[in-house]
View 1 (tube, rainbow, N blue to C red):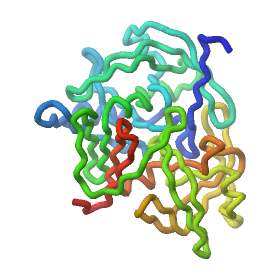
View 2 (cartoon, helix red, strand yellow; view 1 turned 60 degrees about the vertical axis):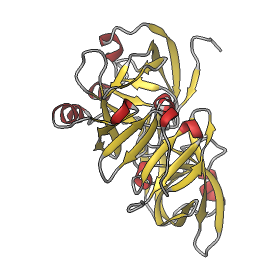
View 3 (spheres, rainbow, N blue to C red; view 1 turned 90 degrees about the vertical axis):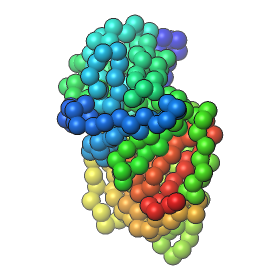
View 4 (tube, rainbow, N blue to C red; view 1 turned 180 degrees about the vertical axis):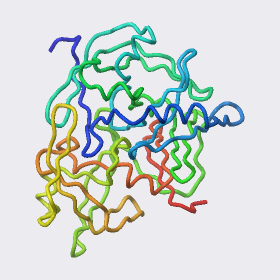
Length: 314
């Protein structure tokens, strides 16, 4: 393989396959009507977020730019910039990368990373990627995706009820709450948790699910896992899902119970793939933001854990 063309596996999801539109409004809202609240000691900062098409969007600045909207996406191995932004930032080109989608591939340019400022806490990704402007006109209306490097840089706390994201310095973060703490494993850069799928009749099936905060669905289940355990709906219409490299077909149904540690969610909506899988073949599928938003979510990559706090948790 050409060393200048690394193959980057990206988990592109049903219902959220690299959606690159609708965030220009978020940029205006985040830069004009929101505030950033630094915590004492500058070890954490609280940012407002906008929920755009089921995606958590926060603002960042680079140099003297206005606030730019970025989507938080644990399913992405790289930070992505919209077409043209790398040139506007005068970033040095450093090669190419192939983004592997659900039904094909798309090539993107690689650039040195800009310094991004989140209300005083800064991060400079080593590299970022950007699709050519000719690939999709929808790229022009968003500014980027913050992938795994962002979650490694900070402990990321997302409070859907309060519509805020708090970034903590990992070295000083000390969790003292009573939320459910789930061990994280990683497949390349994607976080993975153990869960139990409870089928009709009370049969529990243990499985591994990727965590995909950029997916606006609840659960997305791969064809093999869905077929093996009888999760493919027989009376639901077939839906088409498009994404990078093409598309796929799914059917929506319900899973009786879905357990994460001691937490249980009943009648969980699940998009079951009729072809392929939204996750690595080793895994049952992935957990999207529609399910995660029920909790205050803390991604603590430094300690390989995911913390879920139900509403009202002290």
